[in-house]
Length: 420
Ligand code: LLP
Image (spheres, rainbow, N blue to C red):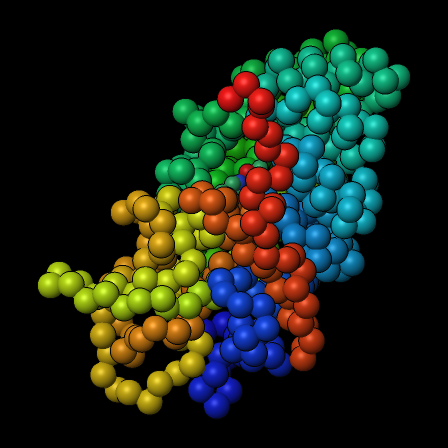
């Protein structure tokens, strides 16, 4: 499916007002390309849909942590959801106010906790009792009081890929309701922590509203029990997880989502927080790669491209589908079936399988769609491949927002001891 800000003009793929071919000529391949318009519009769609509740929307940095992307969203009013000291560093560099940062994750280190408390972030999302104890001790040592949400595990099945489902009872994430209740009863024990929020995130790429409604209803029941015991909940963080279109999904729109969710929270006074990643960044980006060789075997046709699973791992890791677009359309009605595979020495190294497209040849450019979330951020240097550049388009302008890594970047920080 074609996205609005990626379209063909005279047979050439464009991102907003810029030809993808022109960018490829300037920066070389492979590269990631993002549309500023799609990115910011998706943030605004969510903001508008929930306007009446004025939630804090914290873009999930893990989806796309490029400074320019973060900056663009922060300028629109977005907060950021971070899960490591590194992401907190990026959030600071992007100019995100501390009051708009929430920090999740099951394994925070002492130095990460210290840095976040010192910076004065809005909330920690806490995932276990030992973590809560640790945050309390560190805050005490720093003579600070810090705000905490307890991430609860509501035990619902989000009907998504197993690797990205987090709200089931057997998952490592969150705290079961009984334990969470004990924590709140015991709040006085945590004297340097203000236990003022509940956090819930049940998984990712969830296309239906039902799992969310189910989870949030459970959360509200839980909040009712707490409030009956005199606990005051100020923040309710509903996580991320909104699904997008990769192929033929029909996900809820932001306003459909809001019309299902908002009624649940009417007459409630807490501040809502969302942590969407994919919904905002997913369809704002493509991955552009070049055909090196076409290899026809008795069983299959392979288009061997210069981008691999180290650059875009989602197909290899989850069997994910990314639509395949030629950068230059050909005037041929006959289509051929190809597996688009990378140069990495693993059979799992593919970007697309069994796709019908006009006949390919060496130097043809291809784009993998919907690669703006969990694309670059999950890329690696496997097979000693420099990570690719990221380019941002706005209208007729484009800029390289992250340079292609150099050979020297590959060995940066390495030492060969004299005794080797
Ligand atoms: N909040 C928490 C606590 C999360 O764990 C996540 C994602 C999000 C928010 C953002 O979720 P989103 O709105 O993007 O669905 N690498 C996988 C996705 C992993 C998601 C991890 N957590 C993929 O490529 O599909």
